[in-house]
Length: 258
Image (cartoon, rainbow, N blue to C red; front, top):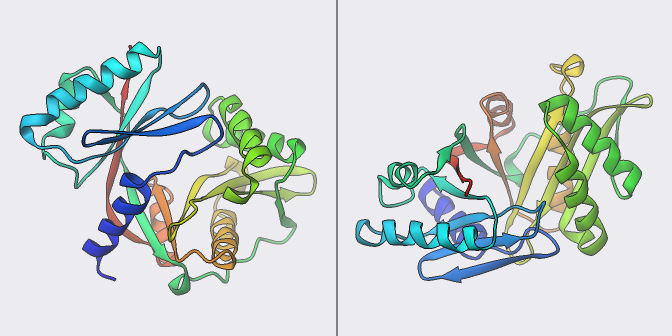
């Protein structure tokens, strides 16, 4: 499949045809906008839009009014190929703040290099219970220097209510959690999404991130998925390219706080 067709499939299945990303969330379709509304600590924001220059500003104002009326911060997830071409400028003018851009990368599982193994002394364990979720949250805080309470709550809820839609793993060195990641499986699509891959600083550069990508890829293939999708940072993009992932476009979170 060529890049244009693959990007169109991604838009159709994961954005325009989006499913709620967890218990308590709902996807709403209004006009030419698809958005998610979720109670805290869930993710709230615009997933897809098909706007032209004449309709863009009114659609932006409508989303601001909707989420502000609910008392929620939200994100407009803007992709590099979205239209109109100046949508990012319009969002900034409306009061949104852009966060660092990432690269949308997609890999066809059957063509990826999945022979990675953990370094000596490290083992990969599935996360299926609260104790495992605590290990994932601990790695997240150490790897990213950010509060992980939202991740703990979200992952616990997902494992409890929809366990077939998420795969979480933690890499252990003895009794120490040194890396963790999760994969979200979208029913009825050909895509599984890789999220949250992080390794504590003292264990980086040893191939653990690559190992967790390969582990999740094999799990996705066993469940019948064809593609993996990643919003890649500048640090993870080179690793993913070596594994066989293809960069397709950019994705930038535009955040609005009432």
